[in-house]
Amino acid sequence: SPERAFLVLFTIYLVVCFLTWQSDLAKPMRMIAVFLHELSHAIATWITCGDVRKIRVFENEGGVTEYIGGCRIIIIPAGYIGCSFFGMVFTVMSGGRKTATGAAAAFVAALLISLCYSPNRTMVFL
Image 1: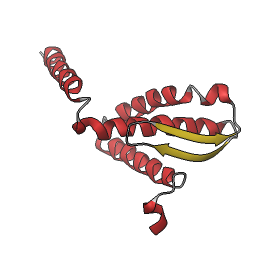
Image 2 (image 1 turned 90 degrees about the horizontal axis):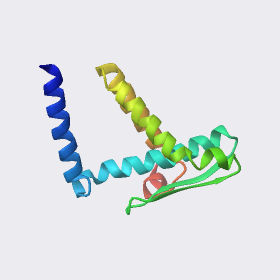
Image 3 (image 1 turned 30 degrees about the vertical axis):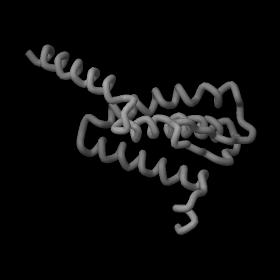
Image 4 (image 1 turned 90 degrees about the vertical axis):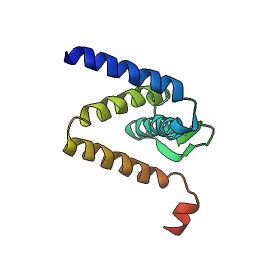
């Protein structure tokens, strides 16, 4: 039955994710999660009329969003709330080819916008 096939495949997916999460294979996904976490802090800062100075994501899977102003009560929990929200959006938008392309384009745009707040060697040449 379709339900049984879904449960079996989903269980296999969870086992593979669990076994590979700490490997180098999954590092890009962990870095994306850190980026979305920090981007959520930045969005909350902008919504509460603050100013974002820098968004930094480090190789050790840490990150920091430097900001001035805004409402800290909203900004501080925004990282976790935003990651959940982005996960929901990407899940909903992955249902069709057009929506998946739109979600990917939005994600690439967010990465490019974040480059403006994280100067590095790439931005020096652009």
